[in-house]
Length: 216
Image (tube, rainbow, N blue to C red; front, top):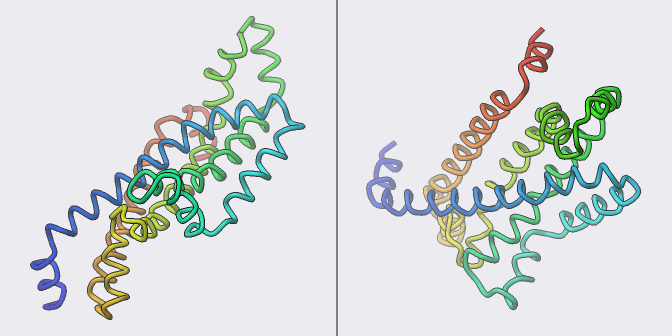
């Protein structure tokens, strides 16, 4: 306990700074992933012959070690926040893309036919029917992606992007367990916090009829 108190006393300000950097990198990356993957997932449901190839390509990119992707961008973008965000963005896409495609693709075709019969345009069907009904599956992908991303963001410290990885790797290099714990615990808490926030968002965005069916 004394060691924890001493660590917070000596490094409290830096801990807050690194926590903010870590959250910033993670949130920007997952936001970009959402903006890219959801529209792409919906678009792929219109061209199923292309979908398997695109999802397969994204899957291959995610198998590349994260450090290798970070290193790949250094000659192009240098070091710092930008290459870290781009690398994490690449890792965020697959779960969201796959879940969006699956969620929209599995919507009851009869509902869509009824919407067409009512004269709804393609955009109206997407906004009013397809995305709302697919929300639980899409949000599951976002939650998985965000939790993974917050853990992977520790590697951003390798290229000078900051974040809580600074504490973890300093602890490893200097053999100081309090630095490792001081970095690892906030990362875990951030992951739980972000998962909770997205969980509340999922509940708010899910149509009441679906929510009632799931709670029944």
